[in-house]
Image (cartoon, rainbow, N blue to C red):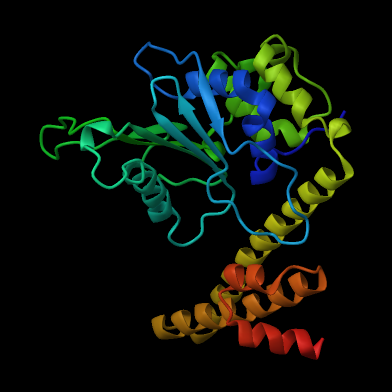
Length: 298
């Protein structure tokens, strides 16, 4: 057997946001989120997974949206790369989901809580070792809650290092599944006994995917790998240029030059693979005029 790597946004949404994923998502949210002992029993998946378009690689910021039985909104995002402004985007999406509930003239009492659950494939908070962290509005000196209407929850996958034999809680098993599904060729026994996780594996089984889905998943994974390579190249180039110049100003110039050269390299690779100019511009931050010129030259 071969399973999708659910750390990609398309695969994540297929597993947790499909029409048949309701029981999977309920189990996952009850395992990760803190509902003060009052677990959720029902939810509505908003905008369920559809077979993704292959031509455009338009990025989906929020991978899964759900409305719980108590009307709390949960927005869930799987993020592979720590891009600039990412932490602000999380807060913006949560605030937008909260404020957009009201129509003109409606009372503020109608606002329902919003939980933004973000799973990252990188470390966000170096200052503590918690795999799962929770943020709410608190008074600075006395740590008194302002209210619980907006909550930010983060799961940092690199901090989770348990082997399959060390999994104790259902939360451990879900995080293990997300981090390792793409590396497995069978369902571990300790995970198979959990019916929702077993079902998640069945949805992630590549044998059940259409040709269109397989191609889209492959292209998305390829797209992410190019971004990772692009960032690594930029960092290496910047360091080399900085060390050669040996002064702070030289390091800054080296970083800028390395990023620009890297953006050009990434753009050329993406053009060869048939990505849309708008998507390339969004990733590389190069002007469309520059991309059009590169396209015409090649």
